[in-house]
Length: 103
Image 1: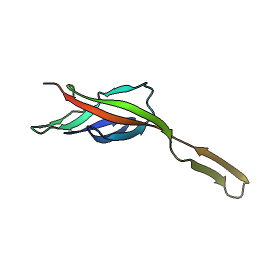
Image 2: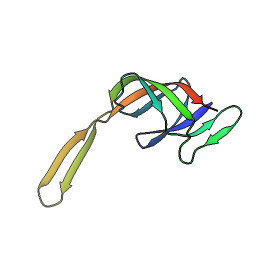
Image 3: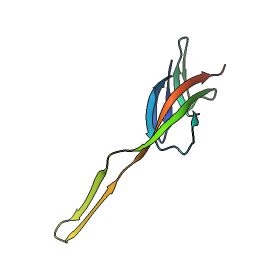
Image 4: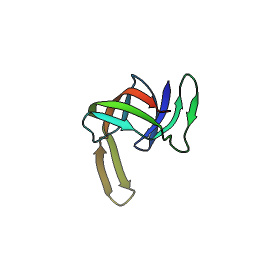
């Protein structure tokens, strides 16, 4: 069984036991994803328009980490303008515990 969920404006394919890297979530331990787009069970396939109402994906936050630094460099030719900054995006790692389909 697998599902397609939405988190942080992005879509992820998840199965039970997977660990997913999503944008930082402000939760302590457990999270429930209600924005489920698609579920493939052994018996049937459910497609949401846009989301499924009776399906929940339950996960547990493992840790927060920062990604590697991205350098942003701006320059204007012949003007002497240069600006260098960096950015490190924070991510949460979520372990998927259960995909619940209510009848």
